[in-house]
Length: 606
Image (tube, rainbow, N blue to C red):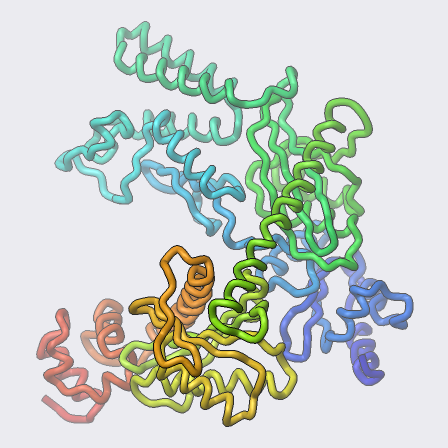
């Protein structure tokens, strides 16, 4: 960092208050690269502006890239902690500890905001009145749990919002998997009772659930409603079978979490073991993005904060391997979230210490297991070098794809895979600027030129292999871009979707590999990810056009017709060039509205 930059940051630090809050360090592009919390903002920020010699390696590397520092003052340390977690989740700063694939963790969602709630899997948590359980790291286990609940508790599966006696029951009613609220077979109060039972089950409060079901069964039996009592009897039997599979750990029926973290260099894994009513409900393992220079204590503190920021089921006691630096602050925060006292403890002996050691061992084994699977990727990459006739093993692969509708809002995408795994920091979007109409070959050439200029200027790493979506034409366009910019040392292939054929330079005929070939599967996964990324960006641009469009000024054009027109023509510009008959031919538009559209753009009256 230059002297001028340091002086500029010191001037910024003078304006930062002494209150609690969050500081945000940004690079020269204005992107947050580190987010931290502080009891006294000004003191914490000034501590980063000391001489580099006294800083840890990670902090020195961070400060070399800091161009500006922003801050958000808060009313308390707890508010700062919550805000820090939110900002890390939002910006995913490079120098913060982060949960890997944080956005992908599934939750179970109980739609208590609906008249007759459902239970479903989601990866997005909203403040919508529903109740969420999670996060979970094993989506298959979540789906098994959902199926299990469906066999024991007859919640509805349908998405309909209206309920009428005139409707017919679906198959789930006839196989005793639903009580048919859609046709009025069950009252809302009775249905809500089942929802309450599901909540108790998901929270691990099985004894309370058993007692409730037994009382209800006896009551129905006393009323001689034997069929309904028999249903509850079956539920109790099913729950008993489940309980037998759970590991009993405490006869006192404790509710607690056991948390531990293991590290091996840059690999780090946190494990959370959930114990409810003295029984082990399950164990979740979370891999983290960390740097080798970060100390274990700070990584563990960050994991605790990140996990419980999203967790929906927080017990009164959390057993950990080491006392967090901000233990009191974390306890205050969690107590505020749950409405009851929450403590963080470090057991020194006895059964609790054994549980913490077990969690640590599981975390360590998860890392070893993940590392053991990596040679497979290396073998596939070595095989790719051999099959594709490459001069080097393609450890770093960049793939490009184009997305457009009728040539409008065309975009390009680039994804990067490092050692066979996606590298999200190497993903890029490109708006097509110079190509008119539908010309994927020319668009690939434009995107490659823009990408290769960055490589030539030393702004990005040099890939070993570039994969373009398409055949010989796209491959020639990519080579033309490389020759024009005099880029050498990067090998090229094309992967055509139609027959999954691989086009190589200097080879007349494409290469066909068996569908189960691991090299082909890797290339397909990379190509499909580039396609997904391009489509995602294209949809984002189209949704912006839908929100604010010239079509809003035309009489008779609402949201539905706007979507029809943009889906058919791709953009407003393409619609302007269309004839009146072309517009009228779209189902749902008609001649009258077509005439309005045409006259609006061309200034003619009907």
